[in-house]
Length: 102
Image (cartoon, rainbow, N blue to C red; front, top):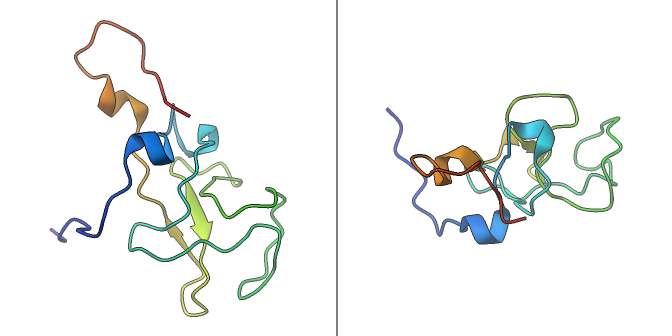
């Protein structure tokens, strides 16, 4: 197995969590799972795209994928998944519905 990302992880309070899947994510994570910075959705460089997401570079899933992702600012890597946890991970075993701090 590959080693887990050991750079400074952002907390759930900072980036939020995915309530059900990537399409429901509205948090502020803006780096990929390998640490690349996300490209602004409103610009088309270094990667051209047809997504209308907004004036930010937060991880999203505008194509309906089950995991949030983003285009990257690295010309050699068009896109990558983001390391955003599922909210259920943080409420497992508790007697309440999954919640997010968004």
